[in-house]
Every structure is written in C-alpha cells, then in structure tokens.
Image 1 (cartoon, rainbow, N blue to C red):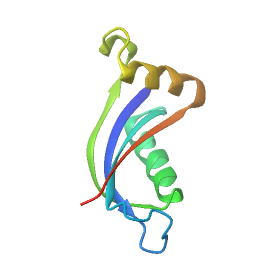
Image 2 (cartoon, rainbow, N blue to C red):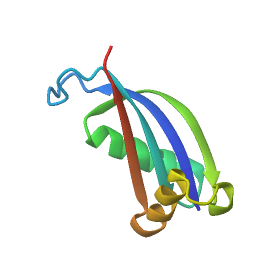
Image 3 (cartoon, rainbow, N blue to C red):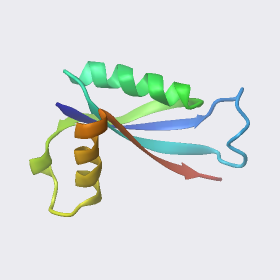
Length: 94
C-alpha cells in the first residue's frame, strides 16, 4: 500500500546548510503496511534530512487509479512502488 503524506517543516535550527530557506512543504509517497507505519517512516527520513516538522497537513492511502493519466503524482506513486519512499520538497522564503 502506498500512502501520500504532506508535512509543513522548517530547517532544523542546528543545521545551517539551507541558507535563506524559511520552510517547506514536503510531499511523501511511502510504501508501508498501513498509514501509521508510513507516518513513522516519513517522519524519520524528514528529520534525518535536517527538517523540523511543524505539522502533518495530509495523510491518506492512495492508489494508481486515483490519478489522471500522465499526472505528476502518478509518476511519484509509481516510483514509490520501486524505491519504497519518494519525497518532493517545495521550499519557500519569506
């Protein structure tokens, strides 16, 4: 099962490599047995990437039939079937 999750995060205060970036929305496609396991996996990876999670914005199971043909999300879903985890980070500055 693939779960789709979106987190709102800011750079970890102990990690300065992100320069002028103030935050990010991080989309995750995670293959896991259930949504709770997907949350655990994605949270650990995001923290390992030196982001501090502010909130979980979305979290739900998703299947290939939920996507329109050729949509960007479908490509990420298909990649998650291969790699088990796919992350898309949209950063912002204020």
